[in-house]
Image 1 (cartoon, rainbow, N blue to C red):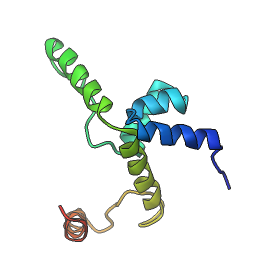
Image 2 (image 1 turned 45 degrees about the horizontal axis):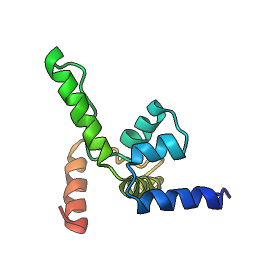
Image 3 (image 1 turned 180 degrees about the horizontal axis):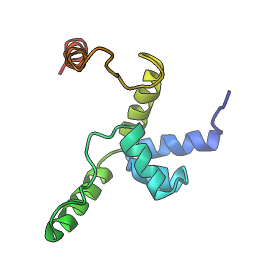
Length: 122
């Protein structure tokens, strides 16, 4: 069983206490490359904001990048770790992944969202 070193845990607690952005925690403390940090934020933590679309007009792309960077900087380490824990806790709940996949058509998906909203609030 893997257990974190006390220095790693202290660093995480310090980042949560100091409200450090999750992207800074991943790159500076966890020493992940920037691209891997983006994968963790968007794919594993399922951050509540989208990435920048590259199909925009040349003048607006810079504004969208700045807006995306601002949203990422507002995503705290506490929120990121909470989202990661939620994702990891969901692994194996409905199958081999943390994602709900329909078996008999897409009608099941809307039922799942309705049920989730009824149980956890919408």
